[in-house]
Image: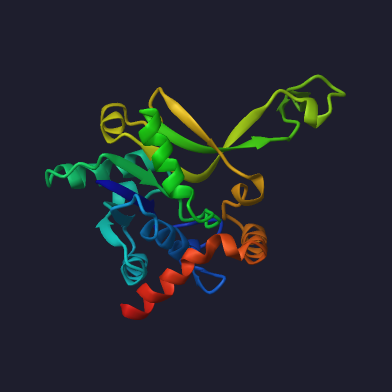
Length: 237
C-alpha cells in the first residue's frame, strides 16, 4: 500500500489560514488532495490536521483525515514528526505502508503524472527516499560581520557556476521503516527527481506567492487538469 500524506495545520502567521484560501477556484489544499487522489500508484490519501475546518474541507475533496495532536501543530513541529505520527496510526492497525508520499499543501503546481513518476523512481531505485529538486542559477553567498561574502568566484557567470540544487517541496517519497528508525524523511540513499523551475519555485507563504502561483497555474492549466476531479469530490460530498 502506498499512502499520500498532506500535512496541513490551521496556524499560519505570515499568511493566516492559507491552506483554505481560494486558489483559482478551490481551497489551496484541494490541489494536493486532487493530485494524490488521481495518481495511479497512490492507494490512500490522508490529511493530518488539528483544525476542524481543514478536516471538513479535506473530507469534502475525498481525503481521509488523521487528527493531529496539539503538540505536533506548533510552529516548531517538523514534517518528519507529523509523518511519524501518521505512520504510527497505520502501524497500530497492522497496516504499515510500503511507501509514504509527502505532499506539501503550499505547493499546488504539480504537473499531471509527477507523483506517479516519483513513486516509480523510488520503487525502481530501491532508495531510502526520492526528493524533488530544481537546479538553482542564483549566485549565493552569506553575510558575515556586515559584509557580503560570495560563495563563488567573483565575476563567474551564473551559467558557469557548479550545478547546485534546492528542494522544491513538490513531492517526497520515503521508506516508512527508515523514517520510523531515524526520524528522517530522507535516509541515506536519496534519489533526486529534477523538476522544471517554472513550476517548482512556487511554495506559497506570502501574497506575492499567491499571485505568481495563480498566474503560472492559469498559463499552464493543461498540466493541472486533474483538479477537475476535485469538482466531482466536492459536489458528491
